[in-house]
Amino acid sequence: MSIQPTTAARPVRAPGEWRTSGLIQLTRPQTIGTLSGLMLSMLLAALDQTIVGTAEPRIIASLSGFDRYPWVSTAYLLCSTISVPIFAKLSDIYGRKWFLLGGSAGFVLTSALCGAAGKFNSIGLDGMNQLILFRAMQGICGGMMMGLTFAIIGDIFSPAERGRYQGVFSGAWGFASVFGPTLGGWLTDQISWRATFYVNLPVGIIAIIALYLYFPYWHPKDVKRHIDWAGVVTLICCVVPLLLALTWVTDYGWSSARVELLLSAAVIMLGAFLYAETKAIEPLIPLALFQEPIISMCSVGVFVVGIAMFGMIIYLPLFMQGVLGVTATRSGNLLTPMMLGIVIGTFVCGQVTLRLRSYKIPIIVGSVLITIGSILFARMDAATRPPEVLLAMITAGFGMGLLLPAYTVAVQNAAPHKHMGIATASSTFFRSIGSTVGVAVFGSLLLTNYHHDFAKAIPRGVPQEATTAFSNPLMLAQLRPQLEATFSRLDNGPRLLETLYASVGPALLGGIQWIFLISAGLMIGLSILNLLLKDERLRHGPPPPAAEA
Image (cartoon, rainbow, N blue to C red; front, side, top):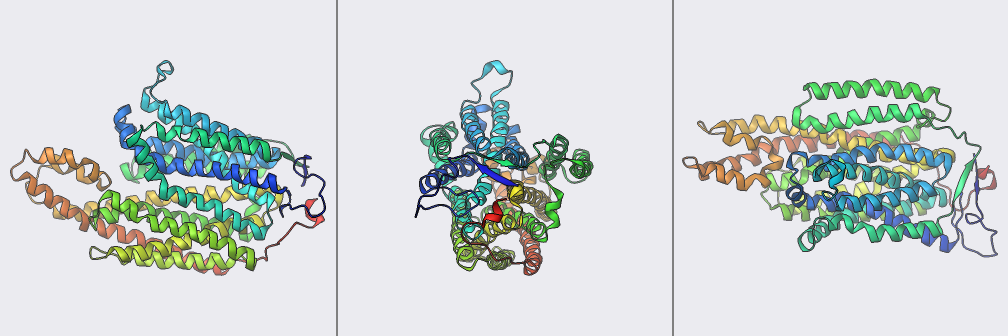
C-alpha cells in the first residue's frame, strides 16, 4: 500500500525543518495541533467512563430508573466495543481524519443529549430510556475516537518513538481514573448531574477545531475500497450476545436459559464471522494478521491482562469496604496509587522503548510486576494493613503502565501499514472482551463463595425476606438505610442486623482471595509466554523510501 498525503500532510521540506519520524511526516505546528486535539479527545472518552459513575445515584433518583441503571454503562460498553474494530478498518480504507472528526463531533452532540435526557417528551421514551439510548450512541462515537487515536500515533511517529507518545495518551486514562470521580462528585453536588455530561462540550469543541485545522487528510492508495458488510453484521451479532451474556451472568448464573442461549448465539455467529472473513475481498479483521506470532501473542496478552486488571480494579474497593471496613470514599481514594502507578509506568515504558528500541523489556518487567502485585493481593486478609494494600497496588499499577503501551508498540511494529488501524484496534478490542469475561467469571465465583459462607453465618429464625438484600454484597452500602428500617420492626432487629453485616466480610474474603489467586496464576502463565515473544529492534527516525511504497 502506498500513502498519498495531501499537500498539508507532506509539504516540501525546507532545509533544517523539523518533522515527525513516521510514514506521515508532520511539521511542528501540525504535530502540536494534532496531538493537542487527540489528547483532548482521549481525555474526553476516558473521563466519560469515570465521571458519570459518581453521578449515577443522583441520575437514578432524578429519572426514576433504579431497575435499569446498569444499562447506562452496559449500553456504552456494548457500542464502544463493537465500533472500535469497525471504524478502525474503515479508516484503513478511506483515511482517518473524517472518521475521527465525525466521532469527536458525535461525542459532543451525544453528551449534550445525555445531559438533556428526560426533557424530550416527543420521542415516546421516559427519561431513563432516553439516557440509555443516548449513552449507546455516545459509545459508538467513543469507540471511533479510541480506535483511531493510537493508530494515528503509529502513522506519524517511528516505532521507537511511539511508546513515548502512546504512554502519554495511556496516562490520560490513569489521570481520568484518579480525578474523574472527584470531578463528577463536585459537579453533581455543586451544579447538577447533567453537568457531568455538559462539561464535555467546550473541551470537545476545542478538540474538533484543533483536529480540523492541524490534522492533515490523506487517503490510502491501492486499497480495495470494499466494505465487508458480512463481517460487520456477523461481528455485531457475535459480540452483542456475548457481552450481554457475560453482563447477566452475575444476576442469573451460567445455567440460566437466557445466558446459555446468548452464549450459543455468540459461538454460532463467531463461526459465521470467521467464515465471512475468509471470503471477504477486504476483510474487516484480516485473519492473516494473526499468523504473525507477535500479533497473536500480544492479542492473547492484552486479553489476559484485561481479565486480571479489571479483577483488581473492580474487586479491590469491595475488599477494602467489605473486609477491611473502610468507608466508600476512602476506598475510592485508596485506588489512586494504582492509577498513579499506571501513569508513571506508561511514561517509563515510552522512555525505555525510545532509548533501548525494545518493547520486550517493558513487556517482561511489566508482566512480572503485575504477577507480584496479584500474589500480594491474594495474601491479603482481614488483618491486612492499608500500607500493604498500597504496596500491592503500586506494584501492579506500575506493571500495567509498562505492559499495555509496549504491547501496542509491538503490534504496530509487526503489522503492515495498510492494516495499522485494525491491528492497533485489535488490542483495545481484545482487552475490552477480556475485561468483560473477567468481571463475569470473577463475579460468579465471588457470589458462589459468598452465598455458601454467608449462609452458615445466618442465625436461626431470621425471616428470609430480611436477608434477601444480603444476596448481593455489591449493593449493601446503598441499602443500609432501608435495611435498618426493615430490621427495626423485628425483635432485637438492630443487633441482628449488625451481626449479619459483621458476617459479610469473612464471607467475601474467600471469594476475593480466589479472584486474586487466579489473576496471579494467569499472569504467571503470561510472563512465561512473554519470554517467548520475539523482540524486533524498533526503527528510530523516518522510514526508508522503500517503506513508503
